[in-house]
Length: 82
Image (cartoon, rainbow, N blue to C red; front, top):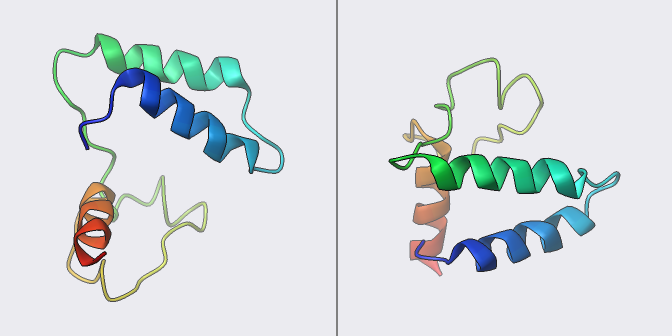
């Protein structure tokens, strides 16, 4: 998406403040630091991986994700429609 690491952290912290209960800020910062150190971008797990989205109830099928394999494509497709 082209965001700086500072903007990314700021947006994640804003999102986290709306969670009940929120994640610990230290946990979020640790995850961001880990991603900063990676030599290449790493995609999230594919939607069909039962250890993630389906098992925690976050997989909601709609018109955008019908033929997508990775949830990152969902975000890009939704952004295109705006």
